[in-house]
Amino acid sequence: MARPPTAKQVIQARKAPKALCEEFWLLVGRRQGRIWYARRIGRCVGEPATVGFDGLAVLEREERKHDVLGFLHTHPTSAATPSRRDLHTMRAWTSAFGKPLLCIITGTDGLAGYLFADDRSRGWPLLTVEAFPRGVIIGVEADGG
Image (tube, rainbow, N blue to C red; front, side, top):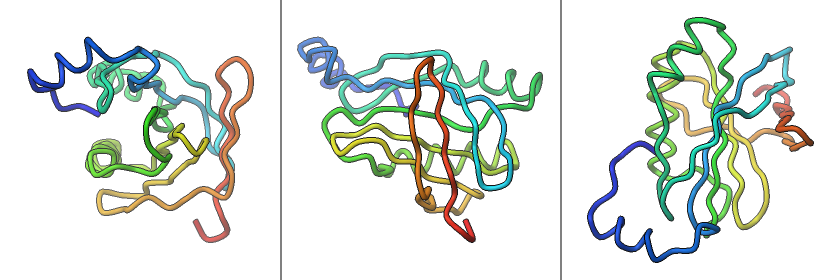
């Protein structure tokens, strides 16, 4: 999600239809027990296999409002499971914030959510995650998650 693309990736991205490019949103809201109430903000469009975002703005948002819950992004050509890059990115952000965060992914197989508890987490699958109109996302942790 954050590494700059290579020259080859830039050339390929220019040829790729925008529908095949990853998208990203910041998730803000609140957690109540096992239920996460989020809304997506700040859409960014990236390349076919990566998307960047303004990390400083994310840090400032958390410092100002303490409401960052995680990130939503797309995998337009693969399943909704965290990639190696996603694992590294989520671990870094949970370490930076000192709190659990969500990684919600829309992939070729639908919508899935993962809870990253700390900087060693592999991402626990949420019991359910649903998208609603106006950018609302609700996720529910499994028992013991």
